[in-house]
Amino acid sequence: MPFRALVVLSFAALLAACSSDQPQTAPAPKAPVASKTAKTLGPLPAYQRELSGTLLNIPAGAEVELALLVIDDRGRPQNLLASSTLSSNGLDLPYQLRFNPEAFPAGARVELRGRASKSGQLILHLPPVRIFQAQTQATGPLRFERAP
Picture 1 (tube, rainbow, N blue to C red):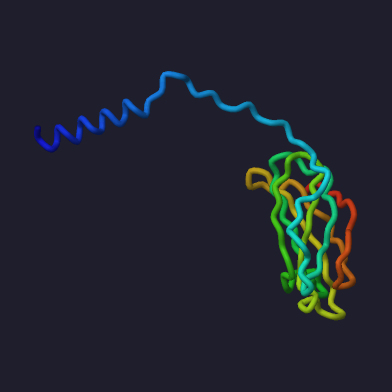
Picture 2: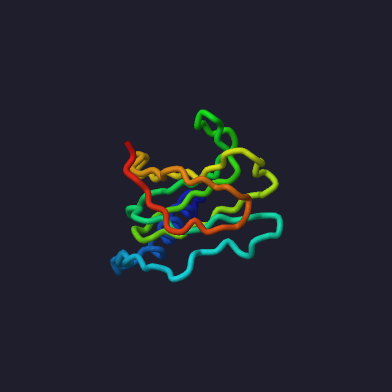
């Protein structure tokens, strides 16, 4: 038997073995379930501090970006201390943002800023939240506003 015929026959046998008579059904989508505890990043190392809280009224499917920034006198970001990206499921979204307290500048203005986008379009923004001390703290619930 020629080599080509053997290859074609083997390929046909492989396709026949992999085919199935039963139609494949897609699993039903699951409804979002609120978790009672935030997804933790593990124990907090001694050299880090953490901001935590809950983001309210973020629509399902939106991508949320949070950033801890050093801000100059004109309100412009000068340095990024920490950032995080989260995906919303339509429920209150817990967050944890870890940063190095040694990078926290003394006497400078530090703010937590955020934005939410859906399909690449900015839909919400977080009014700046001033962070005064480089220590672990809970910001509580934060509400985003419609983007201008």
